[in-house]
Image 1 (tube, helix red, strand yellow):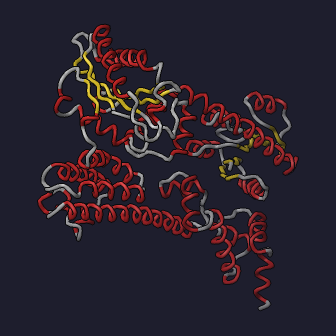
Image 2 (tube, rainbow, N blue to C red; image 1 turned 30 degrees about the horizontal axis):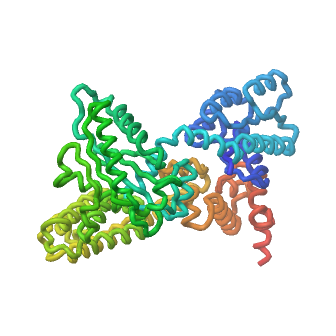
Image 3 (cartoon, helix red, strand yellow; image 1 turned 180 degrees about the horizontal axis):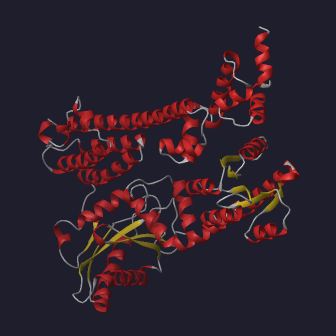
Length: 548
């Protein structure tokens, strides 16, 4: 769909051109203006693809309008109309980048030909291949950031399908196999040197990664990304060498853990010697699936936060820490942050699938007032308070939702009761978001209906209607059609036709007066409009009623 602006200081010309072009097969959204200033005001609010403008207009002529619009929308194509075959005008317009120059006396065919030429030029500039090539070039420059963002999303706990993962690995040039297990290791700089300024920390992290690669890149493909609390995370898969078998389903490890701990000890020594930095590492005892990676990452991170993990230059594997139900539950609770994202995205299915999984994992805790239930309760409280405040939902929930239960854990007898309360509240929030969206849509459409009926003889351009409801023209057009099942222009046309029929049947107004009453100052244009809609001229329609 292309957006076209028709500009002339003679209304009959604007209306005639609009009707002619509207009957063409070109995918156009048409806008009208009756002087340069009005045209420029429209261009400031809407992207304009094609302008058909008179070159001689008072106040702001066509060449000046061209300069101003092209400054706003450099790809806009301009076609000039004039009643004078003046070479100086032609030369000036062509120098300014005009697509074509048409005399008003030449009729419709040259105008439609110039329009076709403009659309062809736009299509040539915006071909799929050119857009994709440009996007790929930009993506190439942004690849390091995009890779880290994607890998961080895998750690966050919402892994995509293997097929989607495979496609993303290929698109981003990541060195991993989507169906093969992955090994995780996490590093922590225990204490920064006093002589390292804040801006130098990134350089030292990069140096740590270089040392890590020196020891591991011969046997593994790997990727480093930032973790929580400024930690360094490495994800690894083997090449086709000695550790390939350790990553096969059901493999026993085949010396993998001893190798990892030995090499990490060497990394520690090198960082201490060459960078004067003390580092600690935790590493998984074996590879895990991509789907299990978020839980594995959380369990490895937890090793930094208790016991031996609180020391300096420690080196631990998670082998000595059984993956019991408590650790699995902790890993699931860590994913609560995703519920915030799913609420914001209005993704009901993902929200409740994760919520139910988390709720079930906490169910077996001995007391609501300690451990995981306490952590989960107040994590959920923070998420729900934020969204209820955003939706102004406290008053609505106050009637029957007992909002005090949202932040008073003692009001719940058990975790099961608390989880049921949160689930019910989430249902109400999703309903409120849906109702709010539907209500606002209905209000916008009703305001358009009312404005059209109150101003049927006035300016009912999409631009004017969008100003009235404080939305962009494009969004209003899409919203109105989705709700009402018809375009705004079709609705306005039907309202004008119905009013014109009533006036022709019930009043003694002359034909041109009926036309003015429904927004057409030009009697010939009103006649063409009415005949197109009813197959009869206004007079023929009036005469047909007398025969009944």
